[in-house]
Length: 331
Image 1 (cartoon, rainbow, N blue to C red):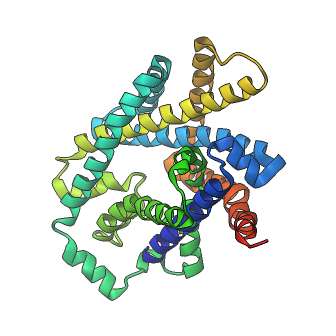
Image 2 (cartoon, rainbow, N blue to C red):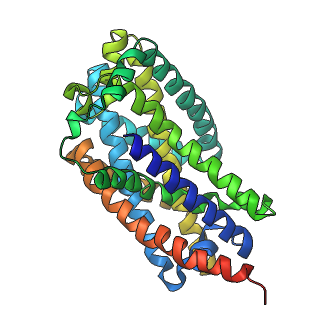
Image 3 (cartoon, rainbow, N blue to C red):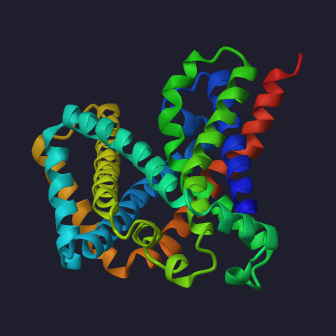
């Protein structure tokens, strides 16, 4: 676990530093220009992979929502999925302002909630965590090589890389390579924070298979630590965050389609077309969610990670670095 955290920090930091400096040096501040500048004529593959990723992530979100609603609220599995579909559709139809308000509240709930949940679990378990670390207990992962564990961290980086190009519009504020390095290191640090806030509480119950094999380990952690007192709050925080994730992804998808239409000299999507597209994506994701949360993460996220590592990380850390160094070299 500690090696996976190291891999996540190094992976996020390295790719972010190079991406920020590549964006800054060649003034590629929007997603499309950046991807075109990096992989040239292969940029449509990245677009296609992003669309698939949207469907997979929404399927994961739907399955997670259903599991939480079933465990905490006692709802039937499909009722939780239906709730996500209805709420996401309603917020998406309400427009950008509603999405932004919903996401702002959700961000505060997410970070505040996870700090609270981690604090509650950790408050009485530091001795147990110290014991697990001092004895180097790895019984749950016996037979797993260090390379496979580091590879897990790399995959975690890979399936989160999709969001990096969409944040490059802020890079025009950077004026020197050292600022790109500093921003990249901050990105790496913040990207590992949720991982660490989950890793340490889970470690306090290691190697309990009831926690480690759970579809949503936090439900087990809070249930055992508080007797279920925080489970309802956890359900609200996570369901809100999951709906926020879906609406944000769908908004990004429709925005990208509008950009393509504008380049072709056509009108943007109408409200009716957005509603139809949203419904189709949500129905596809709901159907995929039948595979279950663990299977979707294990198979879907792994496939997405491989795709983004191949189409983004690999070109960035080879061609991208070479172009940066070449542009820095004296004539």
